[in-house]
Image (cartoon, rainbow, N blue to C red):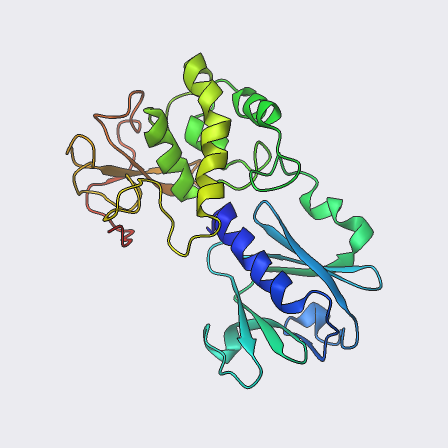
Length: 281
């Protein structure tokens, strides 16, 4: 699932391409909105809210999209060949005189009144890259269920908005605790560092084409996608296992030497060879 920085970048591309311009083309390729035509309406702005994207049009309409695992927004110039997937994966097209935004594989696409935006994003916690960021509230949310695994609490967008599976693993590594540690067992000094560290990671990467958490020239990430390669700090093999409630299990990476706390429960599926490869160096 795209992280908050990826969604922020997508929203910025849409805003820079469309804001202040009238649509010359509007094409929604989903049954519910197949007959809707927004041509002639001016695009007011596009902004991210956690992992949601809100594109507002004059007349009080908002297009709400969510990328989830596979979705993407691509922007092309006039006459430029679309490159983002086959035509049957296109879900939305918004065109102006000089730019065309194409939404591929969008699992969430809905038009709503701008006054109703809270219906789709009102449940979100403080946004790490938004104007509503509140570190005290975010930390209180994460710690509100002391028995919940820290990794799961960080992924819960109702606690704080913007952390995905990559930052969950990287943040726990930088804090020196495993993602299976109960949130209530997080030492006070580490809990105090958590909100600022999370925000710094996303802010540092929101303008970068390749996500980086290590500060090292040859390696992008400390643990995510690195199993079973050696930890960059201690050289122990990085491990990967599923974390989740069974319905939404996600590959979670950690170093058993650098990170203290519980490991996956005995008998839970563990992958000692990386089935989720990612270029990290």
